[in-house]
Amino acid sequence: MASIDLKKEYREHYTARAGKPALVEVPSRPFLMIDGAGDPNTSQEYADAVAALYPLSYGLRAAVKKETGDGYTVMPLEGLWWADDMANFSVDDKSDWKWTMMILQPELVTADLAASIIPELTAKKGLVSGHRVRFDVYEEGRAAQVMHVGPYADEAPTIEMLHQFIEDQGLVRSGLHHEIYLGDPRKSDPAKLKTIIRQPVSGR
Image 1: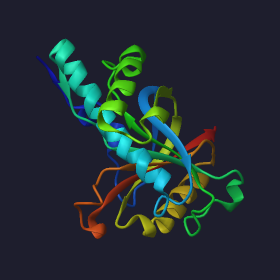
Image 2: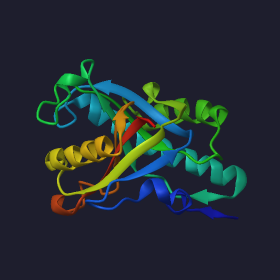
Image 3: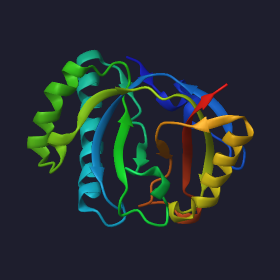
Image 4: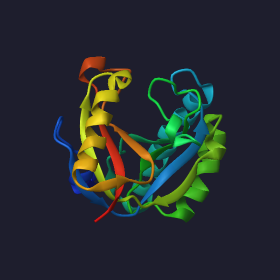
């Protein structure tokens, strides 16, 4: 019986330094994903989405362990964020934001397993948005990332620093704004929350 620590296995992509942006290459990986829209601070749709992702991820882990004997860590919540007009994408006004919330899955989790477990757990646990969760592969490619320490509402200077780093490298932003939430806002002091801010890039 093996226990897989995905944070260690994918350390380069789940650690970052505050104030020190860096370039990374992120390969395609499987996720549980759910799409929605609206301000995450006030949207019931967002709350229901997050409330579905965690039980389904833990349920898949239980199914894998029962089938293979192998365990693994359930990974942190991640979010892709955008607006139809990215010129209007602002952390100061989130009402028009669109998002995909997601949790990384190990290679042990297959599309067939997810297809069998998601409906079963959705019904068993009464997950309002469970039927909207999908198993999909996301490929990010080359990206720049940096650690933000502190409340989510204070991310703007960190994002600006990351964007300036990208420009200084002679690269341009491409793809979706990506955040990886390493802290639990329900249990952590907001000043100590850690979030990896990632932005895909293209260019030379």
